[in-house]
Length: 253
Image (cartoon, rainbow, N blue to C red; front, side):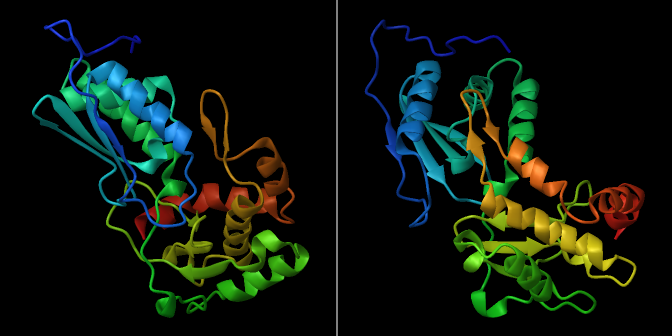
Protein backbone atom coordinates (compact mmCIF):
# COMPACT_ATOMS: atom_id res chain seq x y z
CA UNK A 1 0.00 0.00 0.00
CA UNK A 2 1.25 3.48 -0.74
CA UNK A 3 1.97 5.74 2.20
CA UNK A 4 -0.61 8.51 2.34
CA UNK A 5 -2.73 10.58 4.66
CA UNK A 6 -6.20 9.04 4.70
CA UNK A 7 -7.85 11.83 6.69
CA UNK A 8 -9.04 14.94 4.92
CA UNK A 9 -10.48 17.81 6.98
CA UNK A 10 -13.05 19.47 4.71
CA UNK A 11 -13.30 22.56 6.95
CA UNK A 12 -9.59 23.24 6.75
CA UNK A 13 -9.02 23.11 10.52
CA UNK A 14 -8.08 20.26 12.81
CA UNK A 15 -10.71 18.97 15.25
CA UNK A 16 -9.94 18.52 18.92
CA UNK A 17 -7.09 16.07 19.37
CA UNK A 18 -7.71 12.59 20.61
CA UNK A 19 -6.23 10.73 23.56
CA UNK A 20 -3.82 7.90 24.34
CA UNK A 21 -5.28 5.54 26.96
CA UNK A 22 -2.94 3.16 28.81
CA UNK A 23 -5.18 2.46 31.81
CA UNK A 24 -6.37 -0.94 30.57
CA UNK A 25 -2.87 -2.41 30.49
CA UNK A 26 -1.85 -4.72 33.35
CA UNK A 27 0.42 -3.42 36.07
CA UNK A 28 4.06 -4.24 35.48
CA UNK A 29 3.77 -4.58 31.71
CA UNK A 30 6.97 -3.35 30.10
CA UNK A 31 5.89 -0.82 27.50
CA UNK A 32 7.74 1.99 25.78
CA UNK A 33 5.53 5.03 26.40
CA UNK A 34 7.37 7.15 23.78
CA UNK A 35 6.73 4.42 21.19
CA UNK A 36 3.07 4.28 22.24
CA UNK A 37 2.85 8.06 21.82
CA UNK A 38 4.52 7.76 18.40
CA UNK A 39 1.92 5.18 17.34
CA UNK A 40 -0.88 7.49 18.49
CA UNK A 41 0.59 10.44 16.58
CA UNK A 42 1.06 8.38 13.42
CA UNK A 43 -2.55 7.19 13.55
CA UNK A 44 -3.76 10.78 14.02
CA UNK A 45 -1.71 11.83 11.00
CA UNK A 46 -3.81 9.34 9.03
CA UNK A 47 -7.18 9.67 10.76
CA UNK A 48 -7.48 13.00 12.54
CA UNK A 49 -8.51 12.86 16.21
CA UNK A 50 -8.02 9.34 17.59
CA UNK A 51 -8.70 7.87 21.01
CA UNK A 52 -6.13 5.05 21.03
CA UNK A 53 -6.85 2.51 23.77
CA UNK A 54 -4.01 0.03 24.20
CA UNK A 55 -5.27 -3.26 25.60
CA UNK A 56 -4.12 -6.67 26.74
CA UNK A 57 -7.15 -8.39 25.22
CA UNK A 58 -6.15 -11.88 24.08
CA UNK A 59 -9.23 -12.48 21.93
CA UNK A 60 -9.74 -9.29 19.93
CA UNK A 61 -6.56 -7.61 18.77
CA UNK A 62 -8.09 -4.60 16.97
CA UNK A 63 -11.45 -2.85 16.85
CA UNK A 64 -12.56 0.64 15.82
CA UNK A 65 -15.64 2.86 15.95
CA UNK A 66 -16.43 6.50 15.31
CA UNK A 67 -17.55 8.65 18.26
CA UNK A 68 -18.60 12.06 17.00
CA UNK A 69 -15.61 13.67 15.30
CA UNK A 70 -13.15 11.19 16.77
CA UNK A 71 -12.27 7.56 16.08
CA UNK A 72 -11.81 5.18 18.98
CA UNK A 73 -9.27 2.53 18.06
CA UNK A 74 -8.70 -0.31 20.50
CA UNK A 75 -5.50 -2.22 19.77
CA UNK A 76 -3.41 -4.83 21.53
CA UNK A 77 -0.14 -3.42 22.87
CA UNK A 78 1.77 -5.60 20.36
CA UNK A 79 1.16 -2.81 17.83
CA UNK A 80 3.43 -0.41 19.71
CA UNK A 81 6.53 -0.10 17.57
CA UNK A 82 4.93 -1.55 14.43
CA UNK A 83 6.07 -0.47 10.99
CA UNK A 84 4.43 2.24 8.87
CA UNK A 85 2.71 -0.31 6.62
CA UNK A 86 0.88 -1.77 9.61
CA UNK A 87 -0.12 1.69 10.87
CA UNK A 88 -1.65 2.50 7.50
CA UNK A 89 -3.47 -0.85 7.55
CA UNK A 90 -4.91 -0.01 10.97
CA UNK A 91 -6.03 3.36 9.62
CA UNK A 92 -7.70 1.78 6.59
CA UNK A 93 -9.45 -0.71 8.81
CA UNK A 94 -10.73 2.08 11.07
CA UNK A 95 -12.11 4.03 8.10
CA UNK A 96 -13.35 1.01 6.13
CA UNK A 97 -11.25 2.54 3.36
CA UNK A 98 -10.17 1.13 -0.01
CA UNK A 99 -7.96 -1.95 -0.18
CA UNK A 100 -9.59 -3.24 3.00
CA UNK A 101 -8.80 -6.90 2.27
CA UNK A 102 -5.13 -6.04 1.86
CA UNK A 103 -5.18 -4.08 5.11
CA UNK A 104 -6.72 -7.00 6.97
CA UNK A 105 -4.11 -9.35 5.52
CA UNK A 106 -1.32 -7.02 6.67
CA UNK A 107 -2.75 -6.89 10.19
CA UNK A 108 -3.26 -10.66 10.35
CA UNK A 109 0.32 -11.23 9.26
CA UNK A 110 1.61 -8.81 11.90
CA UNK A 111 -0.41 -10.51 14.63
CA UNK A 112 0.88 -13.92 13.55
CA UNK A 113 4.47 -12.65 13.78
CA UNK A 114 3.92 -11.18 17.25
CA UNK A 115 1.71 -13.71 18.99
CA UNK A 116 4.35 -14.16 21.69
CA UNK A 117 3.13 -10.88 23.22
CA UNK A 118 -0.37 -12.26 23.90
CA UNK A 119 -0.79 -13.11 27.57
CA UNK A 120 -2.89 -16.05 28.69
CA UNK A 121 -4.91 -16.28 31.89
CA UNK A 122 -3.52 -19.06 34.04
CA UNK A 123 -4.40 -19.83 37.62
CA UNK A 124 -1.05 -20.31 39.35
CA UNK A 125 -2.63 -23.03 41.50
CA UNK A 126 -3.65 -24.86 38.33
CA UNK A 127 -0.18 -25.07 36.79
CA UNK A 128 0.44 -28.62 35.64
CA UNK A 129 4.00 -29.47 34.64
CA UNK A 130 3.78 -33.26 34.86
CA UNK A 131 1.88 -34.72 31.95
CA UNK A 132 0.71 -38.27 31.38
CA UNK A 133 3.86 -38.97 29.35
CA UNK A 134 6.33 -36.08 29.62
CA UNK A 135 7.54 -34.20 32.71
CA UNK A 136 8.06 -30.54 31.79
CA UNK A 137 9.41 -29.58 35.20
CA UNK A 138 12.24 -32.10 34.92
CA UNK A 139 13.15 -30.68 31.51
CA UNK A 140 13.05 -27.11 32.81
CA UNK A 141 15.23 -28.03 35.80
CA UNK A 142 17.84 -29.68 33.58
CA UNK A 143 18.27 -26.60 31.42
CA UNK A 144 18.16 -24.25 34.37
CA UNK A 145 21.06 -26.22 35.85
CA UNK A 146 23.00 -25.81 32.61
CA UNK A 147 22.27 -22.07 32.51
CA UNK A 148 22.36 -20.95 36.17
CA UNK A 149 21.52 -17.33 35.42
CA UNK A 150 19.10 -14.92 37.05
CA UNK A 151 16.96 -14.64 33.90
CA UNK A 152 15.80 -18.25 34.30
CA UNK A 153 15.51 -18.47 38.08
CA UNK A 154 11.84 -17.43 38.37
CA UNK A 155 10.42 -19.15 35.29
CA UNK A 156 7.54 -21.61 35.73
CA UNK A 157 6.15 -24.07 33.22
CA UNK A 158 2.83 -25.76 32.52
CA UNK A 159 0.95 -27.73 29.94
CA UNK A 160 -1.54 -25.52 28.12
CA UNK A 161 -4.98 -26.25 26.75
CA UNK A 162 -6.27 -27.34 23.38
CA UNK A 163 -7.41 -24.38 21.30
CA UNK A 164 -10.31 -24.23 18.90
CA UNK A 165 -8.41 -23.65 15.70
CA UNK A 166 -6.96 -26.41 13.53
CA UNK A 167 -5.33 -24.34 10.79
CA UNK A 168 -2.17 -23.73 12.80
CA UNK A 169 -0.47 -24.96 15.93
CA UNK A 170 1.99 -23.36 18.32
CA UNK A 171 3.98 -25.84 20.35
CA UNK A 172 5.07 -23.39 23.05
CA UNK A 173 4.87 -19.80 24.25
CA UNK A 174 6.67 -17.63 26.76
CA UNK A 175 4.86 -14.95 28.76
CA UNK A 176 7.52 -12.35 29.54
CA UNK A 177 5.51 -10.66 32.27
CA UNK A 178 4.38 -13.77 34.12
CA UNK A 179 7.65 -15.62 33.43
CA UNK A 180 5.54 -18.55 32.27
CA UNK A 181 6.21 -21.19 29.62
CA UNK A 182 3.17 -22.97 28.19
CA UNK A 183 3.57 -26.16 26.15
CA UNK A 184 0.84 -27.41 23.82
CA UNK A 185 -0.78 -30.59 25.23
CA UNK A 186 -0.69 -32.27 21.82
CA UNK A 187 2.95 -33.04 22.59
CA UNK A 188 2.05 -35.11 25.67
CA UNK A 189 1.63 -38.33 23.72
CA UNK A 190 3.62 -41.59 23.76
CA UNK A 191 4.70 -41.29 20.13
CA UNK A 192 6.14 -37.77 20.63
CA UNK A 193 9.82 -38.25 21.59
CA UNK A 194 11.11 -36.76 24.79
CA UNK A 195 13.90 -34.92 22.98
CA UNK A 196 11.41 -33.01 20.81
CA UNK A 197 9.37 -31.82 23.81
CA UNK A 198 12.62 -30.81 25.50
CA UNK A 199 13.64 -28.88 22.40
CA UNK A 200 10.40 -26.87 22.58
CA UNK A 201 11.08 -26.12 26.27
CA UNK A 202 14.64 -25.09 25.37
CA UNK A 203 13.36 -22.83 22.58
CA UNK A 204 11.01 -21.02 24.96
CA UNK A 205 13.77 -20.60 27.56
CA UNK A 206 15.86 -18.86 24.91
CA UNK A 207 13.18 -16.18 24.69
CA UNK A 208 13.96 -15.27 28.31
CA UNK A 209 17.70 -15.15 27.60
CA UNK A 210 17.43 -13.34 24.25
CA UNK A 211 14.24 -11.22 24.26
CA UNK A 212 12.81 -9.58 21.13
CA UNK A 213 14.66 -6.56 19.79
CA UNK A 214 13.06 -3.53 18.15
CA UNK A 215 14.90 -2.26 15.07
CA UNK A 216 14.12 0.89 13.12
CA UNK A 217 11.66 -0.99 10.91
CA UNK A 218 10.42 -4.07 12.71
CA UNK A 219 10.34 -6.19 15.86
CA UNK A 220 12.78 -9.10 15.70
CA UNK A 221 11.62 -12.00 17.87
CA UNK A 222 14.29 -14.52 16.86
CA UNK A 223 17.52 -12.55 16.82
CA UNK A 224 20.71 -13.94 15.23
CA UNK A 225 22.04 -14.79 18.69
CA UNK A 226 18.76 -16.59 19.47
CA UNK A 227 19.05 -18.69 16.30
CA UNK A 228 22.68 -19.44 17.03
CA UNK A 229 21.86 -20.75 20.49
CA UNK A 230 18.83 -22.66 19.21
CA UNK A 231 21.03 -24.58 16.79
CA UNK A 232 23.23 -25.65 19.72
CA UNK A 233 20.51 -27.91 21.09
CA UNK A 234 22.17 -31.35 21.21
CA UNK A 235 19.62 -33.00 18.89
CA UNK A 236 18.62 -29.92 16.92
CA UNK A 237 18.78 -31.45 13.42
CA UNK A 238 16.92 -34.52 14.62
CA UNK A 239 14.22 -32.38 16.27
CA UNK A 240 13.75 -30.31 13.10
CA UNK A 241 13.49 -33.42 10.95
CA UNK A 242 11.01 -35.03 13.34
CA UNK A 243 8.81 -31.93 13.36
CA UNK A 244 8.76 -31.69 9.57
CA UNK A 245 7.83 -35.34 9.22
CA UNK A 246 5.18 -35.41 11.95
CA UNK A 247 3.60 -31.95 11.70
CA UNK A 248 0.55 -33.18 9.71
CA UNK A 249 -0.15 -35.80 12.39
CA UNK A 250 0.17 -33.20 15.17
CA UNK A 251 -2.12 -30.82 13.30
CA UNK A 252 -4.73 -33.57 12.91
CA UNK A 253 -4.70 -34.28 16.70
